[in-house]
Image (cartoon, rainbow, N blue to C red; front, top):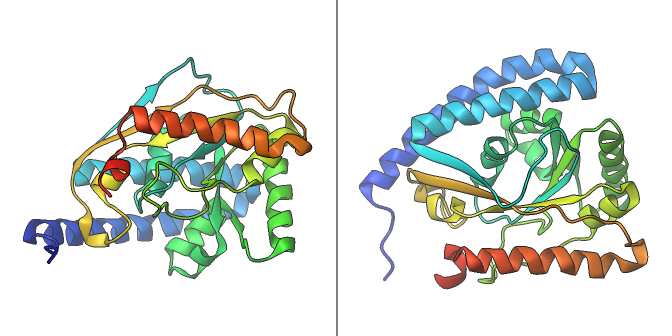
Length: 255
């Protein structure tokens, strides 16, 4: 029989949740104000506030974050960021990783239903309902407008948690279609430690520790057309898969 969470994990998770709620309630008031300034300026302000929110929460939780750059990184550039998705911590981790750029996350429409947090998330992200063709098309148009304003976008290209036991699950086309159509480079990120800190199976699995994000080299869409989208997507997939195995991501070997 598999043991349940330890007493420490339960107490620590409750402590983390209490601070999460406190910071979320504080952020809610600012989001109402920032929303008055429109999707661009207001959205940028919400993005900056979320960074502060993540900084404070990680500090109180004893999570030590580090960004590791495998190649030169221009924080003034505009990118389509993509990453693996393996933990509930992935969302706050985005704001620990991307520090100096205005960006928006492509988020699931279902998150709107979460009290207060859903309101904040919907004001600072581009929401998508993948079950609706028209909703997907609308979100793609919005992402393209943001890129035209030199605002980067972040997409969990696996769509949902990777529960396959592999380094990655299959990718959706959206990020790669947008990259090709706008000529914007893909910048892959690897969230290495979030599975260890809080895996998707239980919100009571949270613990303090290190949090690393690996910035891989950008991958240009130059030379690719929409007819080549599967080739482009596979190129990014192979590089991310190779690097996750090289860094020995825990979820690959633990199942």
